[in-house]
Image: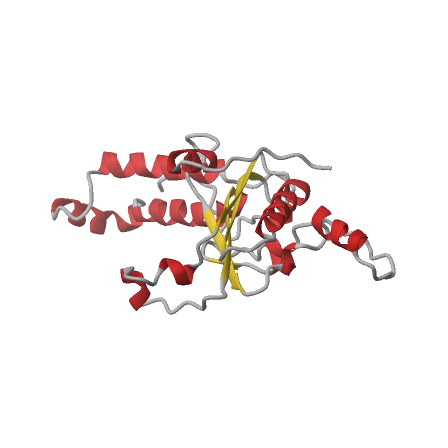
Length: 241
């Protein structure tokens, strides 16, 4: 069996703190899906096994699977899309949330998300929350967002926040683009924009580049994971030439 700490409430500060295991880990990815049926969270979990044991139907024994496959196959990414290869990443923090109308089985689904993260992906920190207010309820009855978001009353929202090496392609791209902008190739344009007050001074830009390179290195996947390639040949050359 699996034991998890429960809390009836969580402050916003505590929530944000849980997403950043250290001051160096600044990037958080977001994946989500909307659905009227939350049963896709069940496969492989103790909740599914319990339901099968309580069922009066005798069925053939199913092949045992790990919970959490939905995290790779059911969610849409609003962050860098690297094929949702969650199982091959290093996860410092994973946080799932279910926003739904009041549902007698909602706490069962909360247990499913906990097992999905802890058993399959083994993050250093994991957290699951449930909110018994649907998007439909949140955006009606006078809320301004209701004028733009016509939500189905039956929609449930399942979201995943991740602080992991999945953010590496984004961090690498930002560092590379900034390094190119500060290179000798674009020096004339850079100096012109500094003089016109469009860009900060050179020293400030170089400090920003140093931070971006550090962030890129923080999120670099483990050696041998085959999750990144040096396609350009100069991505990892930190020189300013």
